[in-house]
Image (cartoon, rainbow, N blue to C red; front, top):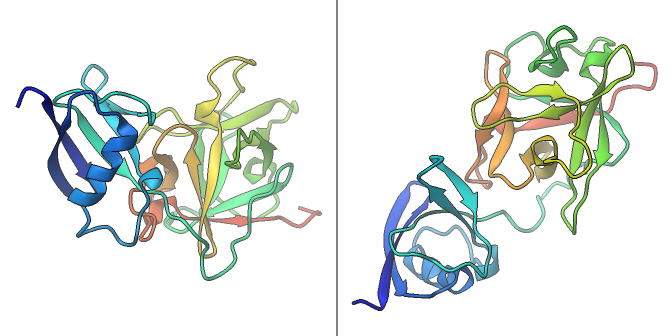
Length: 244
C-alpha cells in the first residue's frame, strides 16, 4: 500500500520487517516494535524504554533517533533497551571529584589495571596495583540532565590534564587534552552503569562501552544485553589508599 512503509529492525540477534503508516514518528513506532518482538523481550517494557538507532549508509554507522523524528521507507534500525531497576546488591556509585583505579575482569596483562603510557598516552589494561600515578584517574563531573556522567582524567608529570578518550569501536583508547568549551566532548565523557559489583562505562551519545580484551587492549565495545553484559565491559572501580 502506498501509504505504508517498511522498516527493517534488529534487536539482539533477531530481525523483523515492521510496516507502519507513512509519516509515523519514532515514539509511535516503539509500540509496534514491542508487539513484533514481544516473544523475546526479557520483561515488561514501556515504549519510553526503547531506544532506536538509524543506520546511515554514507558512514556505515548508526546514529541516535529522537522520539519526534519521522521514519522513512526502507530504514534500517537497531534497538537497545537499557536495564531498569536496581541490582540485588547495592552498587558502589561513581562519585565526582574522586580518585579511582579501574581493574579489568578480562585482561591477562600484568594485573589488568587501566593505565596510561606516559610516553605515548595510549591507555591499556596492563597496569598493576603498585603505587603509580599513571593508573590513577579523577572523575570530573560532566552530568547533563539526570544521567550522571564523568570525564576520567589523568595528570602527567607537568600536571597537564588528560582525559580518557575513545575514538570509535575497536580503536585504541588514548589520554588526550580535553577539547575547548563548545567542542565535541562526548568522546571523553562516560556514563557509569552498574551490574552487581561491577561498573560499566558507556560513552555519552553512543552505544559503545569501555572494554578490554585478554591482551590488555582497551577499546570501545558493543554491550547490547545489559542483563547478560559483555564481560569485556565490566570493571571494578577501586579507590586507592590516600598514601598511594
